[in-house]
Structures are given as C-alpha cells and as structure tokens.
Amino acid sequence: MEAPGIIRFRDVEKPKPGAAEVLVGVRRIGICGSDIHVFHGKHPYTSYPVVQGHEVSGLVAEVGSGVSGVAVGDKVTFQPQVTCGRCYPCRHGMPHICNSLKVMGFQTGGAAQEYFVVPSALILKLPQSISLDSGAMVEPTAVAVHALQRAGDVRGKKVVVFGAGTIGNLVAQVARALGAHSVMIADLSEFRLRIAGECGIEHPINVRTDSIASRIEEHFGEDRADLILECIGAEQTIGQAIDNARKGSTIVVVGVFASKPAVDLGLVQDRELNVIGSLMYWREDYEQAVELMSRGTIDVDKLITDTYAFGDYLKAYRYIEKAGDRAMKVMITLD
Image 1 (cartoon, rainbow, N blue to C red):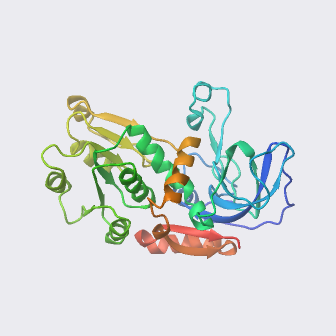
Image 2 (image 1 turned 90 degrees about the horizontal axis):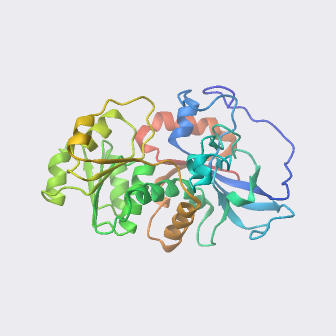
Image 3 (image 1 turned 135 degrees about the vertical axis):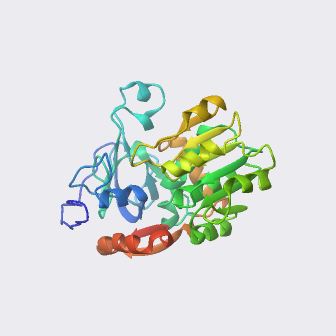
C-alpha cells in the first residue's frame, strides 16, 4: 500500500530463511478493521508504504538450519509481533505490550506476499482439523481469548459484549466456551446479530430498537452483568458500558479508539468499577485459541462472509466499503 487507497503489486525475489527462521508459503490473509483504517489513512501508528497482512495461515515452504518442531508442508500460523526483548514489559513476561512493539503489516512488513519469512519462535503449528481459512482466524480469536484472560475467571459470570463484529462475536463465543453463565451481545446491525445468534450467543440485542439497560435487567436480574467488554472503540459504547455497569463490576476495553473519548470517570470512581485494557495476545492465547477451535467449541467459519483472490486485494477493500456491516471477515486467498 503506497498511500491510502493505493495498492500496487511488485515482483520480488523469493526470500531465504535464516537459521532460526521459517519460510511460510502464504495461503490465506484475513482483512481486519485496522487494515481498513490503514486503507483510509486513519491508522495513527502506520506510515506508508507498507505491506499489509497479519491474520495469516499457510504452509511451511522451508526451515532454517536451527529450526525444530516444524517441517516443510506443515500447516501454520504465526504471531505478528516484533518485540525488543529488553524493555520492562518484555523482561516481565509482557512482550505483547513491548515499549518498542511493531506489528507486521503496520509498523513493519506484513505477509501479503506469496512467501514470508517468520522467526521460528512466532510460528504455531496447526492441527489438520483446522482448515486454512480457520487458521487465518486464529489471530482474531487470540485477541478474544486474551480479552477474557484479562477479566480473570469468567466461569458462571453474566457477560455483556458491546459490538457484534468479528472481534465482538469471538469475544462472546470465547466467553461462552470458557464457562460464562450467559452472554448478551449488543449491536446496531441485525445482520451481525443474526450471525451471533447462529454462533450460539443467547441474547443478541439491537440497541437501535431495544433499551440495553432494560434488557440487561430482564435477562440477568437486578444484579445485572458481572462483566462488560467494549469491542467497538466508540465514545458512545464505552459510555454505555460505564452507565450500565453494576457497582464493583469489570469493564474490559477491547475496541481500538481512533479518537479520545469523553467518559464519566465520576461513575468509575463512585461505583468502584474495574476498567481494564486489553491489547493483542500472548503465545498462550494463540494456543488456547487453536484448542478451542479444534474442539469445535467456537465457530469461526460463519464469520467469513466473502473471499477474494490475492490479485483482487483492492476489490476486496472496495467491497468492504460498499458492504458495510454485511462484511464480517473478508478472506484473501493465494491458492
């Protein structure tokens, strides 16, 4: 992507993996909301030109001389995080919030190419039961797993999710898979709420026609929700999360905010609300995402609404602009 809205294809030499690297033959690339921000020139931490692609699956094409655990032909995905290993977060088991964090496809080159070299430490081998399409969904599923991990043990809890897009849907599914008592998901889109219902989310609520406060009390009783997760990144929805939070409950901020929201911190203080941020994932989140998918306890296939060939990358973006809420996960293929 040379500039917002401008995509060009280049022929380059096939890369060679170093001793501790793996050459991945890329087969699937998922397009996410952050990619769209880059396409529109609205991503605050990305400059141009940039090769995109961070939700990826593929087949191992070559391994470096010092690599073990994966072999040519293995189906894999990878974590798209580049970290320094030296800062405080890295030294204390939190490399996903490295002070110098770079994400492939944003601050450093991504995998929108036929072959892509990845450090072996970031590679995750996929079981045969997980398709290439599903393999490219491990990354967003790991985002959901990490968000629930930030909330602690969710078993038996009543959960509300704001946002029924891909991330919100996966957060709701993971909450249910991890033992939540019941899960409500709220959105303005009937299409996305219908998909959520098909994925087994018990209480899809359209906030355009329903009162979220009334529905929370109706479904969860006067004690309301134990946990709320904001998965949109909008001032209105984080405000609704705070307004509807029970005293002493927890809000996890998963959505990416393009602008600074004004929120009622008086309510946060008065109600002793726990407001927790969630960014990306650990390797353990990736592994748990694969486990949940391989057990069939979450359904990612229903979220893949459209598929485009690699050469039609620009058409895929134009389609997403036109389709709006009917485009959930759009997948790029390199078969």
